[in-house]
Length: 294
Length: 294
Image (cartoon, rainbow over all chains, first blue to last red; front, side, top):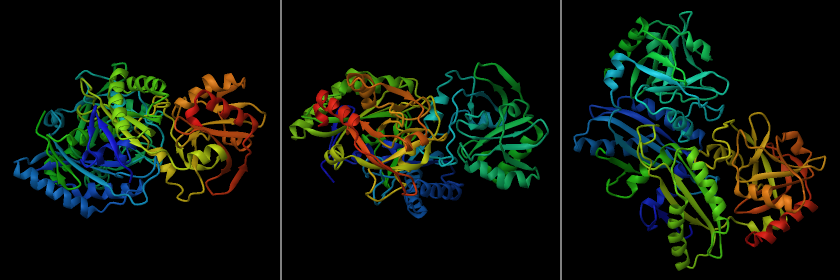
C-alpha cells in the first residue's frame, strides 16, 4: 500500500494511528456495511442470536464475509468491559463494515471487515411510551424502491435522517414512512403492525424498501401465532392506514409501542386511536416471553 | 454527554482518543455526509472552487452547515503537508460529515461537521484510457428513484458498490447504470454523454438519480457551447444508448474518456464505437482549457 496522507478537522493524522483505518474505511466512504442495535439487559444481550443471524446473512448480500463467532468474541470482551464499569443496561450497537481497501467503488480482493461495538443509554421515556403509547407523524420524504437493499439494516440511512429532520418539536415520537408509490413501509426506526377497518392484522411487506426487523420477525413467528391472531404480510396503502383500528410500532430496543395518534405532515390530526384489546394482548405475550421489554 | 464505551476490532478504545469521533460519527453510522474527489496537479487543486461550490450547496440539503473558508483552511494545511512530502499529484478526497451527536436518526441541535482530507494516487492506466478509450459493461443493479438525494455526491453509495461487484475481470473499465425505469443515468463513477442515432448530443437528466458531476457541469456550461455543439439534458433510454454513434464518460479526475465498446451484463458485445470526430474535438477543447487533463 502506498504512503498515507490524512487530515481530520485540520489535524494531520499519523498513518500508524488507528484512526487511519476509520478515515479510509468503506463504511464511512460508501456506507458499505451494516449495523445492529441490541438491547442490553442485566449485562446480557438476550436476542443476540437473532441479531447475529440477520447480521451475518445480510453481510453476505453486501459481499462482506463475517463469522458470527468472531463478533461474539469481540462482544464478550466488550460486555466484560461494560460489567467491570457496572454498566448492565442500555443499547449495544455493532457496526460491521467492509473495512479498508479496494479501488474506488471496487471491493478489495480480500475484505477484512471492521467490527465496532459501542454502548449508549436507553432512549428517553421508553417506559412511558410502552405504557401510554406515542403520537406519530407522516413523513413527506419517501423511501425509494430498491429490491436488492430492501430488508437489510445497512449503513445507507440518509432517507431516515432526512425524514427525521421534518420536525423539530417534541410532539411526535416517531414518523411513518411511505414508498414512492404511497405504500406504508415502516416508521423511521421501527416496523409497523396494524388492525385494518375489517379487523385483519397486517404488516407491510418489505420487498422493495424497509428494514426487516428482529422484533418484526418475533411478532410474525411467535407472538401473533401464540396469541392465535392471524397476521398478513402485504401491501398497506396510506388509505388503509388512515382507517385502521389499532396500530403499533416495534423494534428490538423498544419492544411494542402502541400508536395513539396519527398526524399528517401538515401537523393535522388524521386519527386518534385507543390502545386496543388485541394490542394489549400482543404486548403482554411479548413481555411474558421476553421480560426485558417490561 | 454520557460516558463512552467503544471497541474496534476487539480492542477497547479510550474515549479520549480521537478515534471516538470517528466510531460515532454520523458519516459512518448513516452516511450522513458528502465527499469530493479532486484532482491534484502540480501541488494545486485547479477545480477547487467548483468542487467547494457543489459541496457546500449540497451539504445544506443534508442539513450540514459548512463554510467553504474552513474547508479551504484545512485543505491548505493539507496541501502544505503534501508538498513537504514532495507529493504534487494524485487525488485529494474531502469528506464532510454531520459529525457526532443526535439521538438515533435525529440530527444534533447544533451540527459540528467532521472534515476529512485524504490523498491517494491517480487511478491506474488513466493516460492510456484518455488516449484509447475504454470498454464498459451494463450493470444489472438499478439506481433507485430518489428525487431528494438525486444529484448529491453523498456517502450512501451502496448502489455503486453493488454494481461494481458484478464483474471481477479486467475487461471492463467502468459500468453503465440504469434507473428502475430503464433510463440510462450515469456510469459507476462518472457522468455520460452520447451522440444518438440522429446525431444529437444528449446527457441524462439527473432529477431522480445520479451524481451531478463537476466535470459534467464543465461540459454543459463551457465545452459543448465553446465547440458550438448543441447539448440536451434529457431522458436517455437503454434503446437510445444501444444505437448511439459516439459515447464518452467524464469526471473531474479522469476528464473525458471515450467509450469504444459496450457490453451487456451477459458479457455480450452490444456495440463497438469509434472515438468520433466530435468526441475528439470536445476532448481537445477540455485539454486546451484545463491542461491537467492532458
